[in-house]
Image (cartoon, rainbow over all chains, first blue to last red):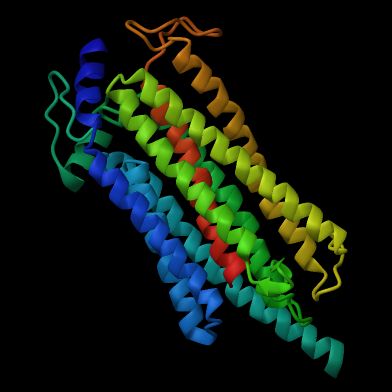
Length: 111
Length: 237
């Protein structure tokens, strides 16, 4: 145990530059996503920009701050595949939400 | 961390490595401290909880025929009589990212056994988290003062309040718990629990190790990660 601990610790320290770069990038990306609201973009442009900056920020945090970039695939895949399944859940609920809205409008106003 | 050495077992890279790690009849996560693996499993389950909240918010918002309150007006802050959209939320976002950065550096200095830097950075992270919670309290009290309730609000669809208080409240609860633990670990670092062999814990016979700072860091980065999604879906959308 002690042996593996030592090798693990030596390899765990990365150059400080990586962290500072990611830190700076996160600031810039947050600033950009705030600008999306500031300039009041609408429609597909707004949604695609919001999602783009969101996934980029989330990816940077997970990959470098949470060290997933340096982990073995056994751990990375155990984490990322269940998270991918959430996307299916989102898609299902988008369809369900549209159907609920349709039936509400139909039965409230048309009868 | 990357490619650890394990006696009597050949570590292969990539997906082949994943297959042989998983089928090795040994521990599956090679070179990963058990505490770190358990924290990841906890964070995965927490991801599902937050996903359920955000998905129910999405469904609630998509299925109401009433107009949804416009976030950039509801969360605007008046500076000298001029409404600035999402000002407080933007500041909160930057504070949380700053504390995430200090945490990442604290983990790095912890592994380098730099006690002073690690301790101060963990303390800075805790203060950042405390600032965040303080601003969230301000935001909540402002909205409650304006008449936002879980069952209705003067701006639009009645569901807005319940989703807002549930999602940001659950996130704020995570931040608060994180802040408590950050203060505890700042104390542990300065008190020298990680010096030399490592002090035995209060509730365990295992020795303290700087890997605990990385585990704490995983939790803290996760709180920041969730905020990225809340910021995008609740405040910007």
